[in-house]
Image (cartoon, rainbow, N blue to C red; front, side):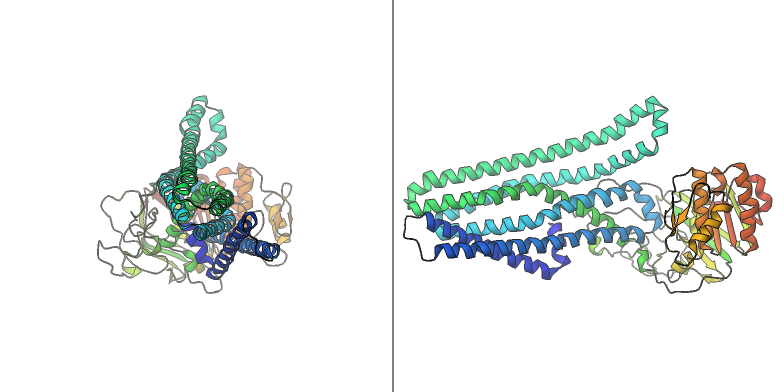
Amino acid sequence: MQLLRFLAALSPARIAAVVAAGLICGAANTYLVTLINAVVSPRPQPDHLLLRFGATGAVILVTGVLSQVLLIRLSQDAIYKLRADLSTGVVSAPLEHLERLGTHRLIATLTEDVRSLSQAVTAIPSICVDVATIIGCFVFLAIVSGPIFAVTVGGTLVGIACVELVLKRVRGIYREAREHEDALLRSFQAVTLGIKELKLHRGRRRDFMDRHLLGSAKVLREQNTSAGSKFSYAQGFGQALQLATMALILFVIAAALNLPRDTMVGYVLVTTFLAMPMQNFMHRIPDLLRGDVALAKIRMMNLSMETMHNEELLPYVERAAVGEAKLELAGVSYVYRAEAPSMMPPPPGGGHPPHPGGRPGHRGPAGNHPHPPHPGAAPGGPDVNGKNWVDHGAGDHRPVPLATLELADPAGESGFRLGPIDLVFEPGQISFIVGGNGSGKSTLAKLITGLYVPRAGSLSLNGERIDHDNIEWFRQNSSAVFTDFHLFEDYLGFDRPGIDAEVRRYLVELQLDHKVTVRDGRLSTVDLSQGQRKRLALLTALLEDRQIYVFDEWAADQDPRFREVFYREILTDLKRRGKTVIVITHDDRYFDLADQLVKLDFGMVAA
């Protein structure tokens, strides 16, 4: 089980201590059963029986508590590590990959999977004690009577084999149910974000509820009911087999072998002693199965991110920001394949092809975990981490320098294409990027800011080519407000003194001082209209005071008066200060402000 292997790999020393404490606890439980058997036996009782009983009870209490405390700490460390690793994985993954996964899958993993895993991990301490007790009881049976031990073990093994057959199916159902949780969460996301549209159209609302939200909920209900029912049947069969084994021993074997009364008393005693840990263990199995499925899902996403380009591995050296920014794009091309990754994983052992743009043939630990292809780097694409591996076909693993890459057209590849593009953005210049919807304006903005990596061509800042060695530094020279921006209530990363005074000054300039206040670098609210929220996003960009500014249709939600302020005052001031200003816009009445007008048409710069 992946869950146990994960815990064992986390801290081998603590696992060894837990196993030792559990074994001692199990041995003490076994000895306790022998003492109880001695008390109820008609034979003469050994000396100091009460003292032995007390000492054994103390050992059981101490080792049991010790093993549980150690496992609780270990399990909580494991949960923390998973949350930290998963969050770091999200932050480290390329933007293209996260966009392909979708918010609903990320949220489902960060919430539902971690919750299921937490329930499974917290159940492990008591399971370990139960298993130790069960082992001790079987050892006692072996001491009491070989035939009884053999029959009991045989019946138990048959029961385990039968239950395992059912558990394989139950595990598969839980795996399918987990995938449908993604679909259900996506529907929840749609019903909250699209509530106005649903309320205004009765037919759409009923269709959405029946086909999507309630449809996914019904499938999930049926799968969980099926899995729970199958496990209950398996559990009932196991109990029936246990009763049949007990009847065989009590009414057949005992008479056939003429077993003494003391032996039968010991058997009944140990069977009674076994009932509670066996019951607890069986009740915990569904939690373990769901936890195992959750861990597989978490690892699938983490491993897919690891086989992508882990941006946490990008070199970063503290360098001063540039004093001015001349940005050059030479033959830059990009392909975005928008097909969604498969919701269902392939059968176990099916594996997946190497990551496009990554090192061919390198499957590593991710070999049996599916992941969606990188949308911005199809076969032949550059690797932002500088691996510079290109897939030339099966069996060809030649490394190719980043500068030699050309935009390929693999058979069957489809999706939006941008480029090749040759552009220069000068400092102290305002550049407007215009074009129809879907022409590639936002994609170009993400390439300009280093959020997307070109498939071919080069991006240079002040003559310095941007590659894996300096792309992290390059990003620190840009400030951007995209259409799907996010507002943080805290001004994170601003550790300079007087930040509150700067924010207050900008709040006045942006006409938000009557709506928002700031204290200790924290805004009083971000619950504003979309236009006002965009002003707060602009405020953050102005506070950063970087050399490259990118605004993606920023003025679309502004009233005419403040739109005039943005174009005539704010942009003009940025130009005066020598900033490189790039604005995606449809406001043709302000085209006279542009020093450079770039028109995109189906991913190409129009002449």
